[in-house]
Length: 189
Image 1 (cartoon, rainbow, N blue to C red):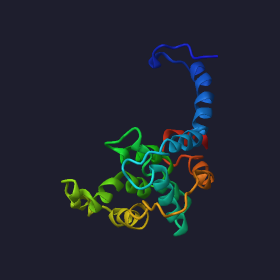
Image 2: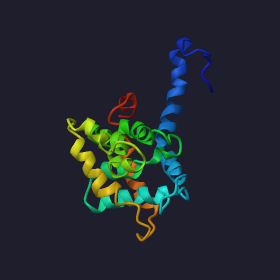
Image 3: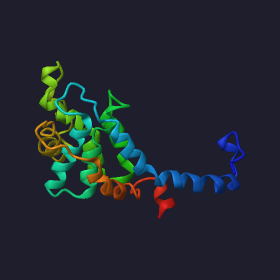
């Protein structure tokens, strides 16, 4: 059965009784789609010593080993998920995916991580390495600088044993099981 409208403004309550169960079923498969998309980072080196998936896995592994909570670890895992579709704004893509499911502090950290990582290399490519300073007054500045220094920056290590995405699958499923901040929160409670 399908909805009958051709303009959303002409939809009816009956249409939404058809649509919503389908939308909620689709919504519940989000962790599967995220894990599948992460696999696209396999073999994509972009000139780095390890591929983008291993970089993401190393970042998450370091965060988990340091005792960060599951939400933080999932943020670390997904921080570069946007590289494939948003090469010019990958941090924004990752932040948009995470926003309904994570705290404001974790969202801000991921949204701004690329500028903070830039401190380590922008000066080599003709950009201002201190670009992050425009955010110095943010409550999340130190948190984001710490994320880069402890987890993102050192996670380009080809000597580190290869990690598997399956290690983090339960965390991904848990974090993405219930939105914290979206219209779907009320619908999935």
